[in-house]
Length: 117
Image 1 (cartoon, rainbow, N blue to C red):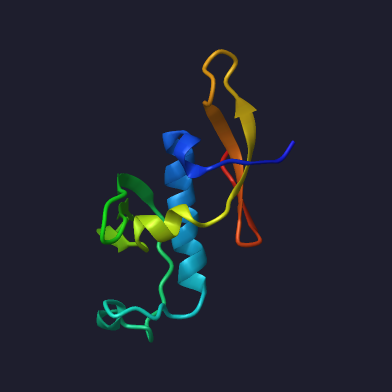
Image 2: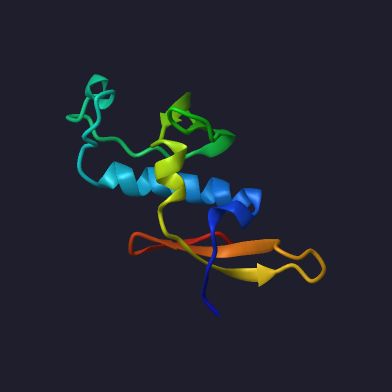
């Protein structure tokens, strides 16, 4: 069964997975047109794989702290308001007794599917 849910009721792991997937989707797209992004080298597109150690969902930009085998990165995302307005489809399991809690097993975002299990 596929359901679309607002981010406000997704469990923490699903939110972290969503932020990570947004980062990956953005990294494969075109350069961001933003006044603050000119400090980043668009000629050196890179893919990072690692473990999310922290999530900061605050203004002006949400960030994740990503630990890779070689170093720890502070990954800049878009503003929380823009991230919240993105649509996401989540497949998973509703909690048996906690109303509004859901265990995400799969995220679909921007035409891509991310397996979480």
